[in-house]
Length: 449
Image (tube, rainbow, N blue to C red; front, side, top):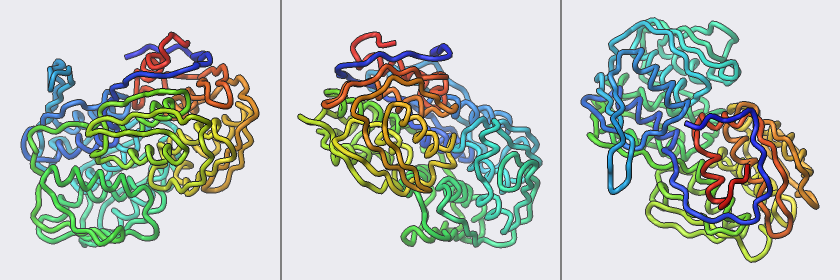
């Protein structure tokens, strides 16, 4: 894993071109790890993401008595791939007492909280200071309402948590859907453990955001032998008597959110840039990012397991779009908007405020450093490109996506050159893509930092 300095200086890059093999999807990796742990049988996982977020999930599972091992990379379809083997515990963790540190991994702490509450025991679960500012109250309320026994040991509505054995009295749950889809994902993933004798029904109160992430959850549950009956996006029923069964072997797709930076690079600074590991048949909603780039004029082509991006003949087009379905990848559009022919507006992105940092505020602040005029609302951002980009020192807020998307500001576009950009604390990319800046330098065809 790359050992980064305190900052990286990126010089303007005139052209990008090349092929990038994506790391595994964070969202898929942590879901698969928990499902494999809860299943009956051993699961062989190919291309699990190696990152901070998966490391804390693996460590937590080991603390709970789940046996897993990483094997030396092996050749799969001609490529060297990582292999992990997880021995399932058939829905009951061997260790019923544990103190678990979850870093800043929302995809780990939320479903694991639900699993611990349902399985029962005496658990303490906590993370870095920012994790203790990220809401979990809707999930805790939904679980406590049906008999779980979860208490806050810090601020109400936020980790850290102390989870005791509960006494579940009903199989009808309700959760709000407008803060984070991870709350519904957590309930869905543990619902088979509650549905031994009677079906479980989960209703969603209000609008459900980030629906593509729920599609990932349902897809992976099916891979592990559990089906869910769905009424639009308002109600989900898990029939009784289902148990997770290992699929034997399972492959982790490349991360579609990480693909967004390289697709945007191709759209801004020539291309073609091809990302491998994700394509038209992906189960990840963030592949829809390609359609947003097409709206901006980029030339996009897709295969079964790849996506390629090229710049248009002129500047990118300004857009006004709803990004509720792809909030993470939408950050990349905010930086690509610096290269557009007019102001762009990103709408329905309130969930940015409860991510690794308050991304709405952070994006507005850093875009202004580059000379952009930025208007910020409760759930929207309007970016007016500068006449010319200004050199800037970009703060990353310990947020991997801030570091990665602002690297794009060093690229030369059709109507304005990239800026000299200093990325502070570049090591934050270890959360999901430890080798990001190496991959970025490779498509720039030169050592740009």
